[in-house]
Image (tube, rainbow, N blue to C red):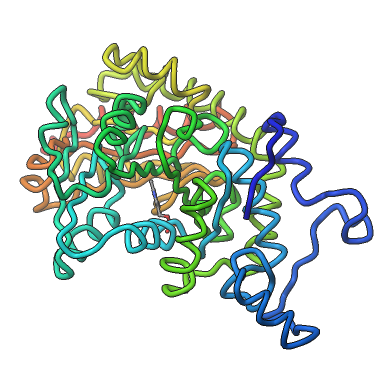
Length: 399
Ligand code: PLP
């Protein structure tokens, strides 16, 4: 679906998407086109629509009017030409990769990437696609490019340690070699980072997180050039079938309406939580762009216009047992995967017996991830405080 030429404010895009005057009888919530197919008036029109199925309505494993409203809004928010929605973030990532890659190609993964993205790379080895993962790309990262490198997939901020990469430098190096750059922009949302403006070719999002925002829907999106999104539609999207339904699109659209106000609140809460965690001796490190990491400072200023509520921390007592005691002591922060909803959540990859594997990836076994929700920083900090206090009080050999 093609985006708009005029740049409007993000808040305006979020609140007005699909509310074009004169359409849908003035309905302010776009109708849910709950239909699997669209009957055609004649064989001639049917053929015409089939030839441009990426924008004409034929079958809901292709384009659907409710989903199209969301796609247009996302394209406009990301300052892209076009967007395609998917049934999940992973559906979006898989579709981008399988659209671009063929046997013999090489993928360079930069930063700590979402676990299943790395699993996808490992899975594609059987189809002859190779990959290299650089969790902490240094000055020499370009040396890992090969003549066969077709795709650079990056996250910035990255998963768990939220490291920020230099988008412009990566985009320029890739473009000079004809390599496509894909960023998973889920952490920053389309509000706080515009990767296409820094030269990145394609942005993917899990809409399951902040954009949906209510932990009641899965979704994904890809934003890029009209030509790329068109190729994606006919290859990775239609053939793999990770479709977003009209009902799901309407839920994500409802989330989008309040995205700017929710993100302002997530940001306020996260900043206070990060500041608090940094005062506690039981916390060895806080991973978040607001935590003062000097190496990231310029990039943060240039690339991020805000910070979100996903926060990493390393407990000073870096063991899976300490992690379990801390996490189990939390009350407001509930244990679970995913993030970006209104509710505060906590999780950790640290498990008994997994210490060596964590160390091999450069992770502390005290690593914990918080998704700071909307309950308010006072309640969130009180919960973290009592859990850290209980950690401080714990003695493995009680008298
Ligand atoms: N990208 C990131 C950074 C994620 O954290 C996730 C899910 O947690 C995904 C992509 C995948 O999204 P989904 O769960 O919607 O498939």
